[in-house]
Amino acid sequence: MVAVAAEVFGDRLGLAAEYARLLVTDGVVRGLIGPREAPRIWERHLVNCAVLSEIIPIGASVVDVGSGAGLPGIVLAVARPDLQMTLVEPLARRTAFLSEAVTALGLDATVTVVRGRAEDVVDGPPAGADVVTARAVAPLDRLAGWCLPLAKVGGRLLALKGATAAEEAAEHRDAVAALGGGEPVVRLCGEGLIDPPTTVIEVVVQSRPKPSTRAAGPGRDARGKSGGRSSGRKSSRRG
Image 1 (cartoon, rainbow, N blue to C red):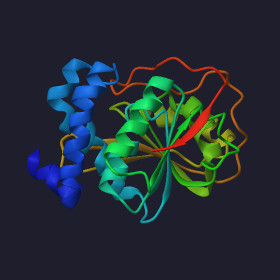
Image 2: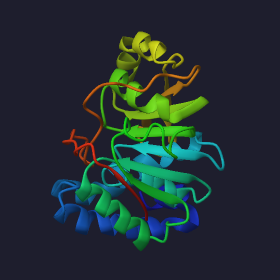
Image 3: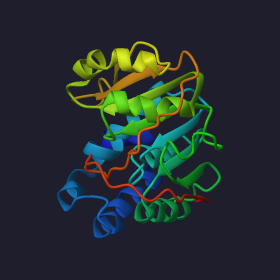
Image 4: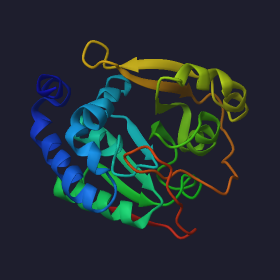
């Protein structure tokens, strides 16, 4: 895994190691990472998220919805300093950690932390992104309702999923189409580097979707469990 991490993060491996330290110390203490996740933080979380960068264009604007502890948002920002990253997260304790981590890692120039639900920020600066990412947030139909309005036409939703991704893509293709998305496609990232590779459902925005009117939105911790939602109040903070 050391060799794989070095290949994925390159000369920013030290920065990735510092983020890993934050996750297994403050992240555990503050309930963002389960104690049992600490020993496998590299293979299960950091490298698993970092390989997503291989399908993100150079210089892209990226919105990470339900960012939690920064997975995959902060990982991508560490691996790819060319990306302009916005981390959208509704819970105050998580946005506090994200803001502190961004500052500690020196990512303030490329990462913005926004407290709010995806539905709350659809008319704000995060909208019109090249790529919207999400990991362990919600089933694809609900996720598309929250995420597609944040991407530009021609932009993409990249949803990190598990072994049942193909079944989920087939089940929700009609709902995704109704929201302006194209055919969900399952992509594998990190093939030849990690086993199993990271499974991603990719949806291209084909027409301008309407924002979701669902009351609930995404929020989750690094263990992939859905979290509660904050009140309608939101705030935006740099780093």
